[in-house]
Length: 174
Image 1: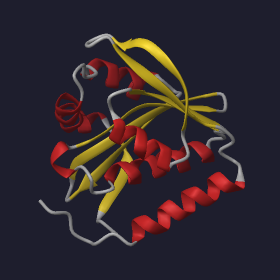
Image 2 (image 1 turned 90 degrees about the vertical axis):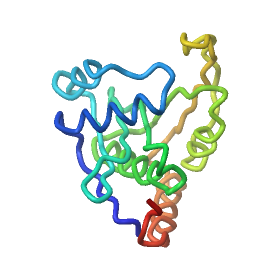
Image 3 (image 1 turned 90 degrees about the horizontal axis):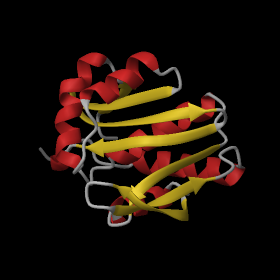
Image 4 (image 1 turned 180 degrees about the horizontal axis):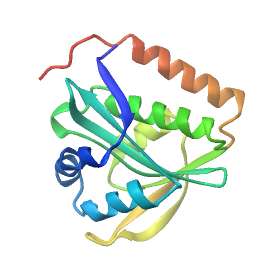
């Protein structure tokens, strides 16, 4: 398996997270938005992926009742397509399940077909559109859901993805 460590995000990670955030999104979150979630939001959970000690990706979700709302997911553009996002999502799902999550939702740009494909691999289905959700380009968002995360089929999907990830070569091309 790729030698990626998944850990809880710390305030000291924010410089690296912000670097990835700014490269990944037309309207990046501010450092303050991350700080509020890290320090003041007891419903927020953030994870980072490290490769050779460096933050190469991150994800965050809010757990509200039994619902996991994925707020963000990004990987360093130079290291995309290395299954880092899958590792982060898998870790996030496992954490959310351990905290009692039963369903998950997110919004993704209609133009971000690669992300939609990744989410569908995890069992997300398209459930609707939020018109003009992304104000920077007045772009619509696809609303995606996973229902019944405690369902044996979903659990099997997660285990299958976990096994697939173990088969990946050890080194990332840097």
